[in-house]
Length: 409
Image (cartoon, rainbow, N blue to C red; front, side, top):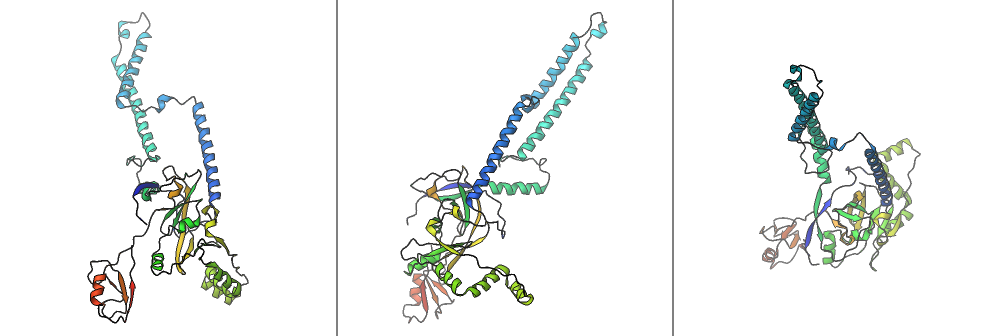
């Protein structure tokens, strides 16, 4: 497949807080959407109610919300002080002595200083309000002063919140078609590598994006098997799209039917552990476990919104006979305005382990193309060779060793 140009797209991080080795209760995507939409509606109604109460509050004035500069505060203090002076002069009664008619400049000065001190307190209160507003702001570019967060614990907490909410740049293929995503839509973070998938997408769409070197090896050997399955909770989701695909779950069901006692013992060891099994034999506990009711569904008919799963729990993906991977649905969230709103672009690869390229063990320069086992001319076992070094050492050899093609990206 030809590589096409890709662009950097920012994906906002979010969703429930993920705790390693902890799994949630059984849930479904529709239950999550219903609960979250209801909470958003309640929050919106509460905010509308609060805003209407603020509009009806007569004690709140626009002047109290205005932020004044120091020059404006000094001007206001002088204006009020001279206004008090004029009021005092106009209130003098006629007939008083000349000394009483003379304006006492000390009174004006005291009044001016009092007004300045009063407005200085207003300025201090405004600075405190601005610091508090920055503390609760979602704008990561705001610089929070040290006085507003005195402890190092708060600093670390704000740092972790910024890293959680920060956007991540990923590469998305230049998809030709565009299929709009309808709101509300849920995004799930699935970890085999790390994918973002939509709740309405099928499991086969995820399977087709999972990269595994075993697939390439089997194709090279012309023994590629299109079969595979996901085991999520008690359901086998079999990929039966290809006419030559095999139902991998059928031998499991045969074993459960024909060896029920053995299957029950293994299931109890999985659930209770080997130690509790021994204690049960000694103590003669009467409590018994029951095998789950396993069933099978075609993978291409199952969507993520149809699954019942636990966030953080490990599930199984099996393909090419016995190549097994653990998949984890880490979290889910509603789609964000900054997300890609093209359904054709999903699943999006968020992270993939970069395969290390093995170099030739002889020249240490070129990439290895062959690997030998039990080779008497090799210094290591197994030993990796490039084409040139392999031809030099094995040109006249009787091939009393095993040699394989070494595949890499």
